[in-house]
Length: 120
Image (tube, rainbow, N blue to C red; front, side, top):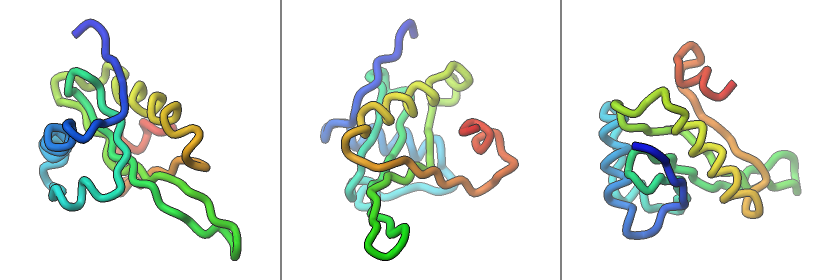
């Protein structure tokens, strides 16, 4: 693999992106109905990684609502990890979503995991 090209998900990418996500996170699989509900996704053209970014409206204080996507599962094929693909997808997602949202929230279960330290 020479170059990864990042882009937003197209409708025809949905099933293969979900299969990749569920392969990476086999202990917490998602159903198609969960996956296609209001998702934005950064997906490279090679099918090596995917990030579901689920937009939500969040009330910060009364009458102040921000639109933010929650990211909770950067999935990279196991044989291609530690090559900067996840960081590239996050950077691309920031670019794709720049005009659509007010920020990006990340949900991590384990603050002592390698995945958590990825975001520092």
